[in-house]
Length: 253
Image (cartoon, rainbow, N blue to C red; front, side, top):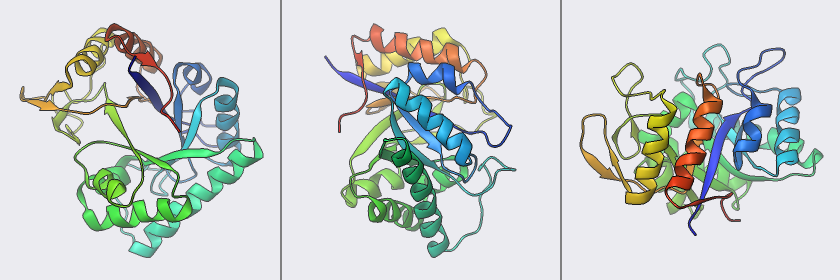
């Protein structure tokens, strides 16, 4: 039976600020992308999220973003290649140390928000970011979108890529998300998400927001924890995976 991972961006609060119900979401996913102190996260929040993951047997990875809490990492910052490299290393190091303190290890990494969008399109930036992940730990997997510079660079540098599908987001092309505000860019109806997951897993095809069909590989499906109704969407994603005759399981080591 085909196995599909369910991943989610978690630990995206800091201090007293809580973004999502991580405790309720964690048992519904099989891998967690944990904010690592850039766009969100602090030692206490990271530790709490790691503890939840450990209790649920969830794989943990670093969700790396610009150091921009005020903008939640959704604003592009002007940084040199060296600054980008060291930012990635620092965030990986912080989360890896806290994971080790909990008896856990990082198994993957990916990028958040504006940094992720830049890595999709900019070859030079993708080379720096992926190179930093590989330099830190060449065994880390990269959870990425198909047909993006980041994923192509991860393959070129020998990292295993876990192909992620964003079931609640509209696409304009493989690896290209429709900008928020465009009709169909964000899908809120859990039943629509369930049908979409089942169809994509069964056919390997996805309709863009303008109706064109594209081929899309899927190893893992993302739950956006900060989306309203995230718990309902997580259940819908899991149901869609089952509808397609697939089994929910973490990606293989």
